[in-house]
Length: 320
Ligand code: RIB
Ligand code: CA
Image (cartoon, rainbow, N blue to C red; front, side, top):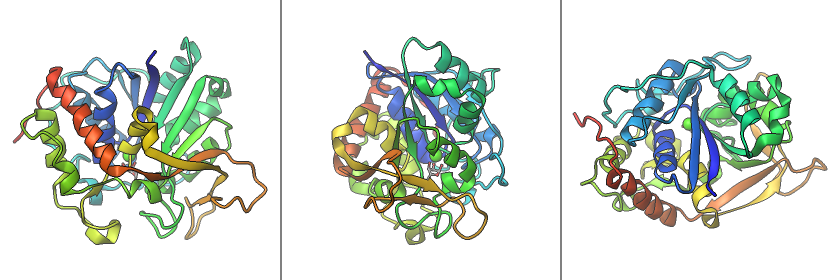
């Protein structure tokens, strides 16, 4: 039986690869829907990007929902300086022919979880605003969340500030709500995901003759703004793709159960994730925190997976 998932996302290049990977494996993953949130770029754009990516994958039937346009309390910070003005610099995709769904993302999360015949895995690739508000509005849904697999936080240095990773920096209150909710969490912090850099050698396995793979390579070979300042300039770190790769190939990842706390006080450490890797506190573990991964094998398998999108009729995007 395949695994039911909902992907909450702020596309973003690494979100794009994660979505394409999830959509390439319908026998393993039933994507019930894609909910979008403000993050890398504003939510109007993340919603359009999610529609474009589903279209590129040849999966326009996957419902896409627009979510929260800003964090719960803090002002919105976006990351065009990294992902480009439209959030998908390097890809040249057609405008979506299909529209977004009418329902709000938070309503979709609640309704779908409540009425599902079996638990659903949430894949959180952006700020946790939608998921946190769904849990506050309808605490009963936590019984129907199989796992919440989250890209966010950092065991050491952040990438938005010295202390905080982008997703948790943007909405620390949402992250704090989710980590206190009791839902089963698997966390991919930066110290793990910076191992998943799309180096030229790892991109060599993507078939440039195939339209979807060609779009991915074009996206990931573009100049990397920030370069060595943000984790080196060997290539773009595929933070979010780790979440979906974990669902498909868990054997490639290792971690341990830890307590994770999120700093919500304003100041230089707002949004920091304190990951008790050595179990120094008496606090109970609330997440399985991934620390290492086999990146070469992950990219090799992703290249093979997305090739299926072309073989199964992935719709070529415009390559201007
Ligand atoms: O810090 C990396 C995370 O922030 C990734 O999910 C990226 O897409 C941005 O959302
Ligand atoms: Ca993201």
